[in-house]
Image 1 (cartoon, rainbow, N blue to C red):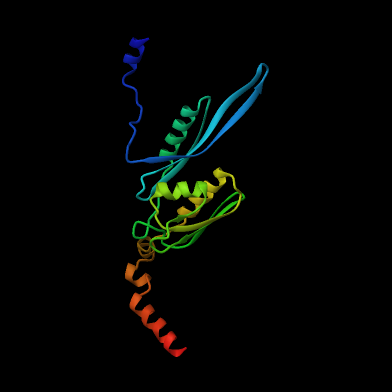
Image 2: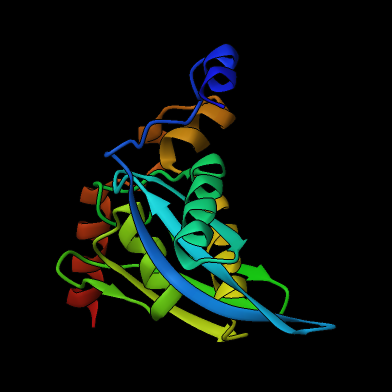
Amino acid sequence: MAERENRRGPRRDREETPEFADRLVAINRVSKTVKGGKRFGFAALVVVGDQKGRVGFGKGKAKEVPEAIRKATEQAKRQMIRVQLREGRTLHHDMEGRHGAGKVVMRTAPEGTGIIAGGPMRAVFEMLGIKDVVSKSIGSQNPYNMIRATMDGLKKEASPRSVAQRRGKKVADILPKREDNVESSAQVVEEV
């Protein structure tokens, strides 16, 4: 048997990359009824990210829990998406995400707010590297749907740089000028 493995060559297992952190979101025991009784298996839902703007989720099913988690982690690493973060800590703009009956609302937050989110959404934000965000899940409480809705919303995010590039303008032309905003708000206060 050892000779056969040598002939095939080295195994092509991907090396575990320490740059990715993973979080087990849900584990579910499922059963299949067969002639002799029931056969139990496990389904795992895992979120993986580098905490610098990349995140992915995966699900895996197997007879044993560790194998299900391993399969889910591998799938999550294959399905990663990149999200542009503002100042490396929050989202660029407010957004909504939907999947099936799951709907989530995500909003930018000032520094020091922290992650205000429930279970599965919190795991996604932590693995993504977001430090300040306010979010709410409306609708389905199913963790699979909540994570898919969150990922749907994150895919819609557009940074000022990408919008400027798409329009053929400079970033300064798109962003509101801060001095003007401060002066105009001061004038409004004086008038009142």
